[in-house]
Every structure is written in structure tokens, then in C-alpha cells.
Length: 135
Image (cartoon, rainbow, N blue to C red):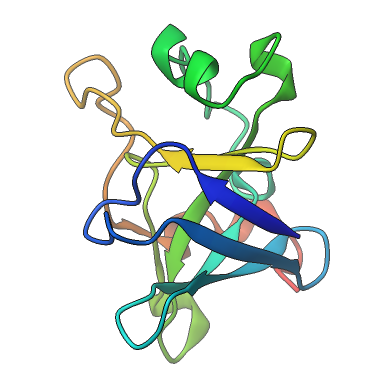
């Protein structure tokens, strides 16, 4: 599905459109449209790894994504893949937000003082025992 970036993706502020493809319902590919400088990420559904990933969505983000309620927003996290897989990392501090109904997306950065358990590069191996399989 194609999305317009209503909030910028950090480091890729010039990217105005992206495509989100589901790999299996828990993993996704995000491709920026716009040439060589466009981002390409693997995203993961945070609920696959942790049940304590709860934060307050800024009202400004809900408004920018034209959501009627925060529940309309799907939250995904960037995953930096490594070999072996357990050496990968997940960015819990800067989630990507998607409003599928409006075709809008963006990224926010959470306050690390308010959410000290959310790291920018959390080791995947910390969460691997919580699921039998991440595939």
C-alpha cells in the first residue's frame, strides 16, 4: 500500500511517498519512492516482541495523520537486520505510524526520559525467548 509522509522519516525528510508491503503480517518492507536516496527498511510489529510497548501518541501526530482516534494508527518499528538474526536490533524509540484509511504515515521520536525502556537499538536477542519463532 502506498502512503504519503505526513510526518517526515528522520534522515529522509525529502521522501514524501512510501510503499508498505506485508511480508507475513508481523514483518513488513518499507520502500521510499524517489530514487537512490529513498529509504528502504524492514519493519516489525512491536507486539510480536513485547507487550509493554505502550506510549501516548502526540495529538499533533494524530492530527497530522488525519486520524479520528489513536486506535486508527498502526505502529511499526524499524528493524536493523544482522546475521545471525539474533544479532539484529529494533528501534523502539522512533516508531513509524500508519493510517491505512487515509494513506498517511510518519515517524515520531519518543521522549527517552518518559519511556526509558524504549531504546533506539534494542538487541533482538533480548526478546527472542518470548516467541517460539519470529518467522
